[in-house]
Length: 264
Image 1 (cartoon, helix red, strand yellow):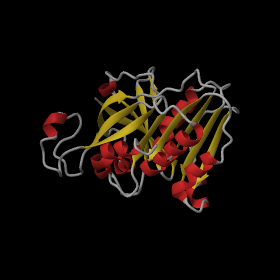
Image 2 (cartoon, one colour):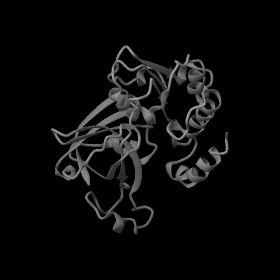
Image 3 (cartoon, one colour):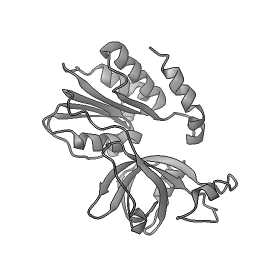
Image 4 (cartoon, helix red, strand yellow):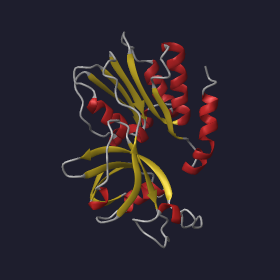
């Protein structure tokens, strides 16, 4: 499956919104998950092929030709217009996906598989706790928009600075806390410290925590030890690892997750 770039929006200095359309999306079937994602394939600049391509065939090519898979949350699927919106985090010239998004032109194509997903806010919960960084912003904002306006919700989002805030729909009962790395002494622990300082309401709360592996792991341990969360029903997962490329993180992620289970 593939989409053609129809719209490009600069949301912040570190995020670009790409709207995909075209007949290549005819088979797109969304699910009910608010963290639904696609596995997109980014082609090296010197590749001898372009979308749509046979994935199994191009996987047999040399390393300088093979597409690089990256996972992205679906920000929005419009069933009426058949358009797919994906928000890309950019880091200058680093990475395949962010670089592709920065260079994208109307008519460019992006091939992918999916969507998949596993989380949807629990409507039976008394309140909701969601936290993460830029990599989780799409999933968190989509989830908040799916939570009833009357339901209490506490959201913690860490970004580089005020200019990196992204607007999304919420209600007065949805407390959105923006944390700026540029304004805290230790950016790597800022998300955990903000959650530690939060006054947890009574009742059952639904949990969605995603982002950098080390930060997510520390928050997970805190919530288990101090708030006795049911880890089986909580959605807590690392999207990336500081100082690791995507490929390096993939190579150690399975062991990382196994080690994490031994934390408590």
